[in-house]
Length: 153
Image (cartoon, rainbow, N blue to C red; front, side):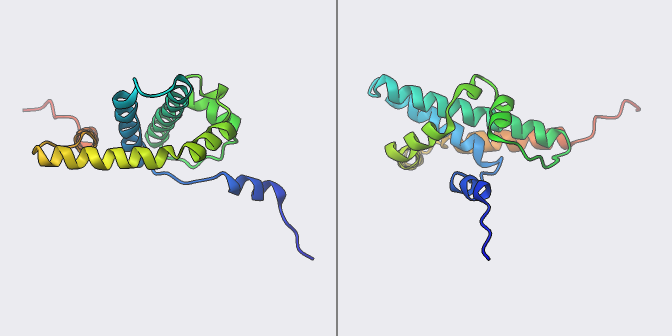
C-alpha cells in the first residue's frame, strides 16, 4: 500500500531554498532593475516587482534577526512567515506572486540585467553594487564579531 502525504506534496511544489547571503544580492539587483526600468514598466508590473522586493527585504531582515537570536531553526507556515516578514507582505498572495514570477520570467530578466551591469562596470573599472554591498556586509560582520576595546591602560 502506497501512502502519499498530500500536504507535503503540495508544499514541495512551491518550495525553494535561499541562503541569507543570497538575499541582499537579490534585493540589490531587483532594486537596480526597478530603478533602471521604472519608466518603461507598466504599473501592474512595477507593483508586482515592488511586492517581490518587499518580500525579499522582509526575508532578509527575518534572516538577520534569526542569526542574531542564535540561529535556531524554526518551521513556519506561509501566513506566519508573511506576518513576520512584515511591511504589508501578509497581504501578498504568494500563489499569485509565484505565478507572476513564472509567467514574466522576472528572475531571468533581472539576472541578465545584473550580468550586463557587471560587465559595463568592469569595463569602466568600477565595482558592481553587489560587490560593494558584500564588502560592506563583511566589514560590518567582522566589526560586530570583534570584542569591545578594553578600557584598561
